[in-house]
Amino acid sequence: MTLINELSAFRKLGPGYFIREQLEIRNWTQEDLAAVMGFTLKHINKILTDQQPITLENARILSEIFNNTPQYWVNLNTDYRLWLEAEKSDQEKEAEIKSRIYEHMPITDMIKKGWLKPYQNTGELQNQVVNFWGMKTLDFTSIDSQLKDFLSQKIFDINGYQAWYTLTWYRKAQIESGKISIGSYKIKELEKLYQELHRYTIMENGINIFLTKLQECGVIFFVLPHLQKTYLDGAAFLSQKNPVIVYTGRFKRRDDFWFTIAHEIAHVLLHIPNKNTFFLDDFKNGELFQIEQEANSLAFEKLKHAEVLDYLNPYFKYLQAEKVEECAEIYNIHPSIIIGKLMEEKKISSSLNFRKENVLEMISKRYLIK
Image (tube, rainbow, N blue to C red; front, side, top):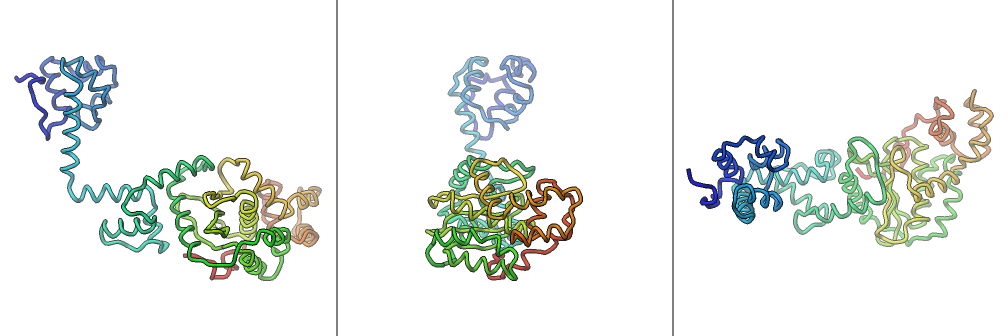
């Protein structure tokens, strides 16, 4: 039998073949090699079946064991990996492309929502994805970079949560905001409107009246449904020089809508100094950082939470709908917002029939993005 150090590197034979041959010469088992190299049997098996590439460290150890050079093993590994790449079928290459795309984007959900068109082949899908992200070629490096920035400012502690999908949703929000042209941003007008936010919660058609006023302040607003595994309630960011507030309607409740609006306006006023800042908010999970606490605090203030809790505190044990309505009238705040806060703080367990409306049916269709 020819000794291994006399063999040249055949393209279709990986390093594992030559290691197995050397084991046969020495009458060694895989367990023997694992013991000599200090690796687990599972790791050795992957090397022998060429599932695990030979690292430089592995090459040095193998050269000591089999009396040849590290370069020999590096060359064997490199030639084999290059051959594998060249031998990939078109189907395998398409599967790899689609796998990368689906890893970063919930394609099925996006097609269902009409954000992407059904595709006949991988090329059609790839072209749509490139256009969606504004890429020149299919390269997710920039998204991965954004992902690091995003995870550094916000942590979602939810089973199944996909940060890449969240950035995909954010990209769609950016695209839609870029289609909307309104007047210049007037921060003083927004501050005045924010002071009166609670009064709009009790007005007839108050939601749409408030949204019109919001637009007059130069703030873009629209409803964009959340994507699967993103669990988003709302977002705030800049589009050109205009602040943008997006509501997902995840819970479709009136109190959820008003809290989201109050929270995102707080971000606009407190935390968005430049176009690179954005906030994607989930109000049921995740760690509350200082900036989120600040936004919550201001939102609670505008929705009269402290006054409401103080007023109703003596009645929590046997709270009746009439008392909630009385409180709502005193503080000019919708009863469903009061109930939402009380349930969140576990002061009560029943909604007293104040939270049953679908808020998406109250919002003008011109704000709804499908």
